[in-house]
Structure formats: structure tokens, C-alpha cells
Image (cartoon, rainbow, N blue to C red; front, side, top):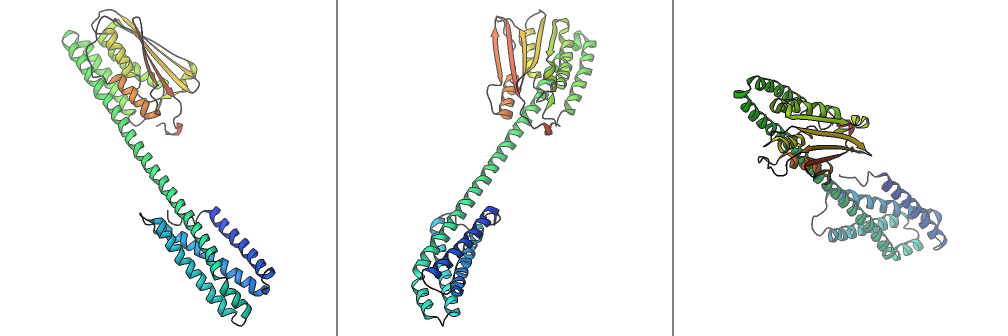
Amino acid sequence: MANHLLANKSFRWTLIVATYVATVVQAYLLICWFNISDSIAWTDSVIHNVTLALTGVGVCFSLSHYRPAKGKYIFLLIYCSVLTFLWVGGCFWIMGEMFASTPYYQHWLFFAIPIRFINGWLIVIFIGMKTLMWYDMAEQEQELARKEAIERLAREAELFKLRQQLQPHFLFNSLNSINALIALRPQQAREMVLKLSDFLRGTLKREDQQWILLPEEMQYLQLYLDIEKVRFGHRLSTDITAGDSAATLKLPPMLLQPVVENAIKYGLYDTTDAITIAINAWQSDDMLHIQVQNPFDPELQAPAGTGFGLASIQRRLYLLFGRQDLLETNKNGNIFTTLIKVPQLYDKSSNN
């Protein structure tokens, strides 16, 4: 960040133009109001204004390397006062030596010291204050950027943790199902093992993907449903529909599996009836809507689970979009509806 203000084109040009204007105005005043010769007036004006500009540059450069954490404004007042004193004293000595044979100018030069000190001090203080505010603002922006980076890393770490939790969560349920089938239906148990292998292999391929197309997610979901259909047979059927416009939309991978798993748990557990899980996807403005509906018996209670499914979706959506209204659930009679809304605001270049 050192010399950041001096590297700013706007600041440099403002300093150059201000120095030029001040030089011309001062020379004009010395010639017209104080009857000082042209050569002396221009020399006086150039030396005083150029060295004053260099003093301001020195303040910017110094403050870019050292700014006390406490009492920086008191430090600035003292520092600028010393620099202004040195500037006035140096210009007085240079002009006095150059035009020692001009008594009128020598007399005027001496009595102009207080005015020049006050004007120069105000200008140097202004530059110093501007410099402090500039660097304070730059430090605040850097601190904000660091906090945002830390929050982003923490958010990504939590998202990664949630995605990793999906694997053992589903795997444990599938192994329990396989264990239940081994004794009663060994052929279906073997079939379920093969399908589970394909499912986990597909999971590994999507490990680094943050976004996938809706058809890919539906294909991935179908693998999961094939596994569950081995377990439940004809009792489980699905009705999946998706609008043509939704085919190009994207969502986080494995977002729908916990919803469908939840629908199966509440729809098929503790009952021998057959159910149909309806999955419908459509686009509305810049939002992907996915609705999952399943029947359930309000008088029966499904076995207690980990509570991870819908809670994980709610958390993932919040971490990605900072909104709490992207997951809705509703009970209407014996139909349980889950609605997921996925804003299409991601960076499309970071798909894979």
C-alpha cells in the first residue's frame, strides 16, 4: 500500500495543476501589487510553490511508511509544523542569497514570513490530513476484504462439510437396507450393492463440482431412486417432470437427494401402501423451482432419523445465497410438499 496515494493519477494531476496555478497567481500578485520585478517575482513564485509541492509529496511519502497507531493527528500537526518551518526557512535563505543586492525585496521577503508560514502550514496540513484519510480508508478496505475472504473460506469449508456428510448419511442408510435384504432377498441385496457402487462412483466424479445442470442432478437422483426401488419394490414409484426452460438451469449437486429420502421415510415407513413421489421442476424469472410431493399418514410417525436432510438443505442454501426463504415445506391433508428455490446468480465460469 506504500505510495498508493502518490500513484493515484488524479492526486498527481491535482497537485501539478494546483502548483502551476499558485505559481502564476503569486507571480502576478508580486508584480502588480508589490511592484517587484518580473524576474524576481517569477523566481520567488516558482521556488516557493515547487518546494511547497515537494514538501507535500514528502508528507505523503512519509505517512505511507509510518503512521503512529495512537495520537496520529497530534503527530501530524507537529510533523507538518516542522516541515513548514523548514520550508519557509529554506526558501528565505535561498531567495535572500540570490537577491541580496535588492533591499526592497529583502525587506518584503522578511515581512512576508508569517503569511507564508500560515499559508504553507495550512496547505501541508491539508495534504497530510488527506493522506491520513486516504490510507485509513485503504486499510479499512483491506480489512473488510480480509474479513470477507475469511468468511468466504469458512462458508466454503462448511459447505464442503455438509456435502461430505451426505455420503456417510446415505451410505449408512443403504447398508442398513442391504443388511435387511441379505437374508430375505439375497438377489435384490446383490443388485442393490451394484447400484450403490454406481451411485458412489458418480458421487466421486462430482466431488469438485459446485454447480451441475438440472438434468445431471435428476440423473443422479434416479440412481438413488433405483437403489430405493430395489428395497421397496412396487411400493415406490416416481413421477418426474421438468419444464424445457429448466433444463439449462443449475443447482448445487446432491441437493434433491435428502428431500426425496425424507419423502420416502415419511411416505413408506410403517406402512405397506404404495406411494408415488412427484417431482416437478420449472423456471420462474431467474429462479429454479423444484417441488417434491409425497403422501403420508398423519396418524403414523416415521422412525426418528438424524434430522440432517432438510436442515442441511436449508443451511446450504443460506450459505450460498444468504437467504432463509429458499426452502418451504407445507402439509395439506395427507400430502407433504417441499419447495426448493435456487437463484441463478452463480458464476457460470466456475461450474466445474
